[in-house]
Image 1 (spheres, rainbow, N blue to C red):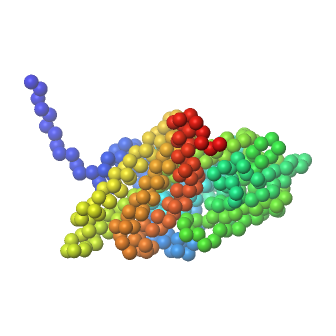
Image 2 (tube, rainbow, N blue to C red):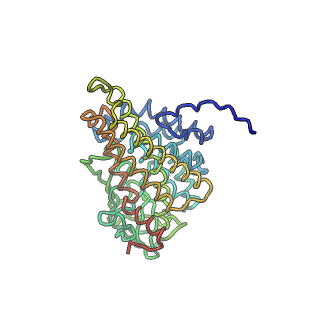
Image 3 (tube, helix red, strand yellow):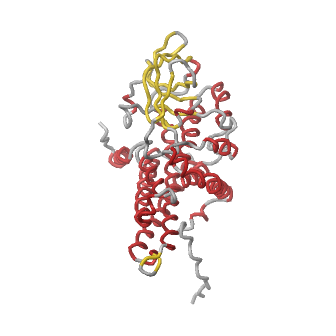
Length: 397
């Protein structure tokens, strides 16, 4: 005979954390998450709707994010915080709960502009740029996508011709986050020896930008075109540590990691807004949260949220262990953005006409997620990356 253990009834899980993922984080991770969450609630939420409506980026927040150590926070040395991949992911999650534009700024600064300098730059380039970028004194952007070459960046037309100790760049880049406000552009171009990364400073003759207007998505973010017309860049501004597509693709993996986490923040914000609305909106004599169809929608949102968060957390643990593979990042980016977009649309339906106003965050997130669904590899591209990994057959060519 074995004695039966006396057990207490498990505590009801929180509506936004049905599987108690919070218990899987360590003290430092929770502290970072809570700090960024508080910053978003106090400094971002009250103003972001106005910036979205005006089509402006809240530049006044850059210094505060730098002081919090969010710029290049996952990089070691050179004034960077050197925190874990999971901590970086949690910060992205909370920033995107505020707005995708804010998370995009941090992703581009740290993963697309600072990371290539950190990974492939000379010691002189690292010392010159990274400490100032970590402080927010220098804003960076990443020039890869072109008007006719998005999903196939290897077909880029931007070229670099070596003349003595200077490269002459010609071409253009499209859909560049931070482009119009950047002090430094990390630009990828075809040189005789292969694709190279160039550090192009603002004000360099032959380098100009124009911001893309009339966007219906990522309105609280600067999106630009970059133009190079016989732009002369000193050879010392070339990233010496990489030649070929490995350079830009490794940067994209860094950014996609942050997106996989960030999408869960937008997902949570939409779900929580719909839940609170449904509990307070009375129709037919009771809150609409009491109706079966609304509960079904909320249950699906909550379930997909924790699934996405678990996927992101495992991805972060793998990255911290040095074991993450790019296809695993594709799995998380594809799933988490897709499910966040579904939740945004369902949340809007729960909220009826109120869901389309900027009084609530749902339609803003929904519009933003349409861009997140496309950038850093479209949903289709990530589908084919996964397909190639599991079949061993490429569908790209």
